[in-house]
Image 1 (cartoon, one colour):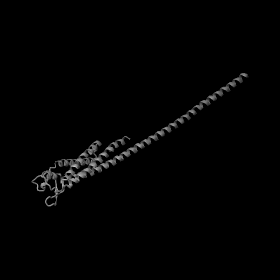
Image 2 (image 1 turned 180 degrees about the horizontal axis):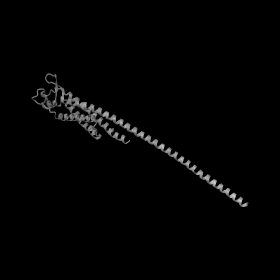
Image 3 (image 1 turned 120 degrees about the horizontal axis):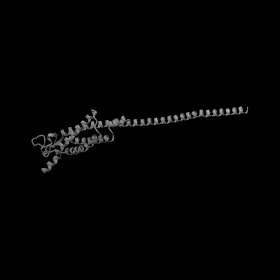
Image 4 (image 1 turned 90 degrees about the vertical axis):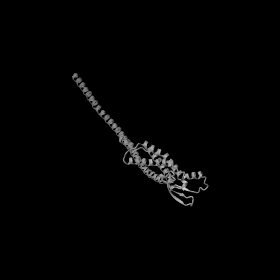
Length: 260
């Protein structure tokens, strides 16, 4: 009987041990699953935050590209308008330069006579009855150089406008070199036209013949206007060069937009 009781006790102890082990083993998966859920939630939060930051960066880049593209479009429109105005100015300069209209005061009776100093009259010819004798020292060699400069600037500006209308791109360096390079030439034309508009050959005539009566007056108004328009054209060239220098071209913006 004692042995039987002892065996029953041992059996009960073994059942208790097995039940405890089973409880412990069942609690381990529950803890693991809860920690796994927490890890997944943390990873999900990190991924959401990273995605939001990427969206904000993409929006900022898109806004910057759009702003630059709008600036480039505005710069192109302004440059186009400046070139149109400059082309009109250069056309007027050439018309005034080659027509050479002005007035001359006749020394004998004091009346004013109209003048048209066209290109064929820039050098005095005694056989030409349209020019007075006091124009004997009329030799405007510099006027030929001035005419060549204005004609070249007119055709080159018109050619650039034609390329722009055809959609042919020109590098920014080329535009800057043309715009700033034209400035000294337009200033040269301005100074030369303002000098010739006062008829300096009359002073040479009076000095060479030692004439005391120097009352004859002459003014080539067309050349004076051409000089003023040349100065305005110089300002337009400077404006075009500055706008071209500080604003990128549209093709660079398109490349940046493609990359984004």
